Image 1 (cartoon, one colour):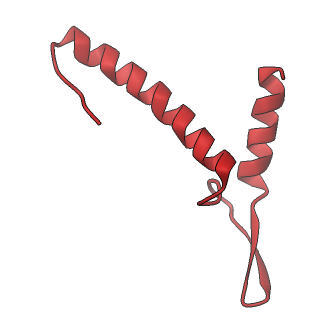
Image 2 (cartoon, rainbow, N blue to C red):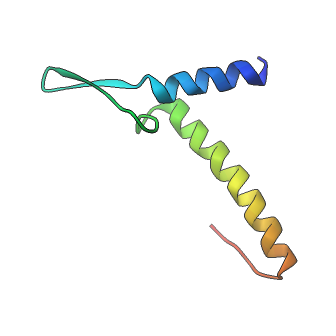
Length: 67
């Protein structure tokens, strides 16, 4: 599947999250739903990219990072 299709689908998941609470419908306006498998995948992708950049910066300054 092309990356642009994946990006469009991810945007739909983040922007179109609705839920019901006490018989009322609500739309979450920022972020993805907690517990949704795809939201977890997006979070892992984000953290992988963030950690990759962080580790590169820390290597240059001889610092250590662990998680």
